[in-house]
Amino acid sequence: MACWPDALRAGRHRDSVRPITAIRTRTTMAKGTSTKAAPAKAKAAKPAKGNAAPAAAPAKLAEPHAAKPAAPVTVTLKHLAAGISEQHGLPKAQAEAVVAGVFEAVAARLKAGERVRIGGFGVIEVKDRPARMGRNPATGEAIQIAASRKLAFRAAKELKAAV
Image (tube, rainbow, N blue to C red; front, side, top):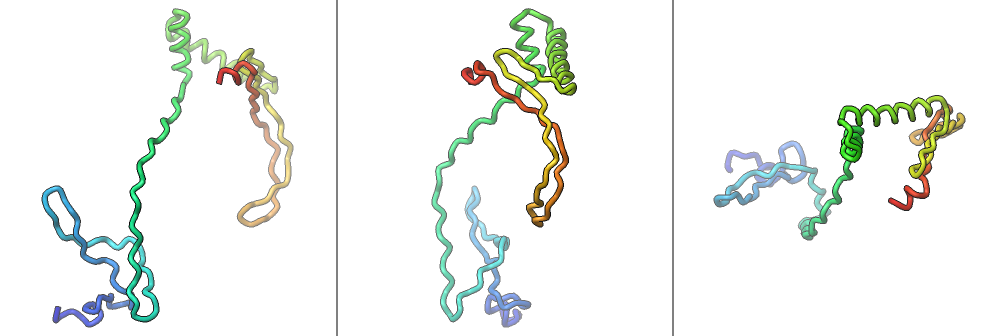
């Protein structure tokens, strides 16, 4: 250590007055231990005024890992068609064509501005939202929000009871 500058010998980087944060630590490996330099992840806290030693970091408490809830299953048109083909003994291609046709018909009626009521399921309709004034949350500036059309769904009593 005789060739190191005084700042490094004192535990400080040559260009700053802060202590060096990357110190040598021990890491345990599968076969024995080895010594490696720990990477500096964040800036070191400023030492307290005077010659007081910095406070030790609080120990982390071990928390039991809670089981994550399972992600909901996404059902596609193909899944619906497969279920219909099994229930009614139809070929899968024909069932897929029927399901796709039903949803195309519903979409066409909604585009025309009609309300679609499916018994036991609910009502799907298009609602017109008028233009209105709003505020930009970042600047507080008043802005004009354009008129738009939104889909609205009201579930039927039977669907609400089933879910």
